[in-house]
Amino acid sequence: MKLRNASLLALVLAATVSCDRSQDGAKPGSAPVTQGGSTDPWNKPEAAADTLAKPLFWQLEKDGKTSYLLGTIHIGVDPKRLPPIVYEKLDAAKSFAMETDLAKASSLDLTRKDGSTLKDELGPEYWKKLVEALGQQEAMGVNKLKPMIAATLLSIRGLPRTTAMDGALEARAQNKHKQIVFLEPFEVQAAALEKWMNVRALKDMLDDVPGTDQRMKELFAAYVAGDGTKMIEIVDGERSRWKAKGRPESEYDEQMDDMLYKRNASWIAPIEKLHADGGGFIAVGAAHAVGPRSVNELLEQRGFKITRITP
Image 1 (cartoon, helix red, strand yellow):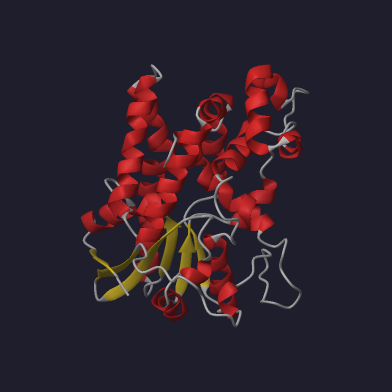
Image 2 (cartoon, helix red, strand yellow):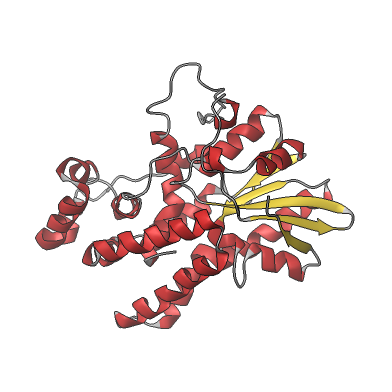
């Protein structure tokens, strides 16, 4: 999934933030609850509004078997906006695969251990910017936490606070008694976040809050439109902004490898196994599904026929 680099990295963590917040307004008995605490919005009686006309949704065919892959956005798009064909294919699938076990997010240690505060690390100038962007109460709420949390809140501040799409899909799969497959340990995502969502990344975002907001809006609009090409353009635009700050391209490439490409490659074997066992439904962040070295491209290289599904 990328707008400004830190903001795009933040989308990974946004899944865990939004899973917690999505329950705040839930009414008792409004929907079944899974072991992880996520609700299944499709079991609510109200009809979905503004159904996505062109979801990032593909059919994967090989050796006489069929699987399906959905590119998700972690927060901002209500899962009920997905068209009926998406959950029809999920309901019919033998198994469901997603990036990682979001229930383990609670095990991620986010507290600063050295006695310092984020305010200390940022310094007066950047702390003032953070307060202006998030508000005094929310800024103080992250003051004793690692920079990745502030970066996450900053990156999603302009998006609708919806149920996390991947969490909702997992909830439906659990309620339908599907086999659940996690493509990587949660620790893999946590390590990448710890490495790249540091105070430097947060400062980059604070240096251009309006630009960060605008690129997030563009990314959000591209996802809603089902425009994978536009999403790739947004990702590609990050390289020039990285270079403009005088940073080596090799470091940018390392970050992209850690956050996208190495992870994509590591998912191919479990996806192939899931497919060989009878096919399934796979949900991964949209940035993993489109463009060069994406999951779809890697599967195509392994002999899969990939077909975009448009309702």
